[in-house]
Length: 349
Ligand code: ZN
Ligand code: ZN
Image (cartoon, rainbow, N blue to C red; front, side, top):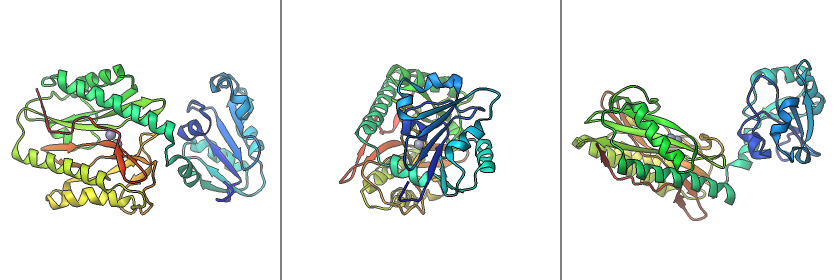
């Protein structure tokens, strides 16, 4: 904070608050606010009845300023933030209504806390990597079991997805969720599972994950129901090769956009560049999408400890879509895949 000239950091409920304190505060219409000054004990403004949910050690970590319904929490928070000038950094999750109420009371320079929090969160420590690895491994195990045992023809997308999510939960992953997109739906990268019946000839994209100790897994595998066409096999192998090319491009010091370019060049050369419509990846941690973003224009370097997805795809409207997504850890000398569920073209019944 000193380096960036930030007098005070304010954080609403969300992953930044969890990262800094371990508090899983509810996002709601009542103000919950963590206030961190450059020096001294941080303050926490919270509804009185939420205080017990902060945990036994809350008072050791922060000075608690509880408020009751009928009182003005913005006034209470403003007093703790302090009214003199300076720069106040605002974390990315704080309802705008609370920020506006604070800004009406406090004369200061308001900036995004993103650069400050990125510096803390973008490189994972050993405990975070272990949680991410566990989440990835258990999600992989659920996939292996799913492809070995499930038959998806005649199921709706929602039913097929539910089977996979149930298996994922059974492997110890918390709150699994995801998408299943079949046939022409698979050409839409963020289609959510619906009532369409899965049938022979379909490409079926499953993109799902959940958490272990709060840290996310995020995996995509694409299967084909019945024998695939030549074009499908070509596209599948292209996406697989792009997934590998992106992985091989990961090395400390390399600009993050270079990983996207590595996958994109391969798909371009295969003649399907027009069908790869999204960035190749995003960071993964307490949020399922967080820094760093592997996207054109991001010249920030890869750093050891970063964890991000590697998820190239080809989407052909009216026909099919294919995506293969793994989580990757950048290491001192290269990279390690956190996911190892089979990537071979799998035909399901
Ligand atoms: Zn995903
Ligand atoms: Zn993803």
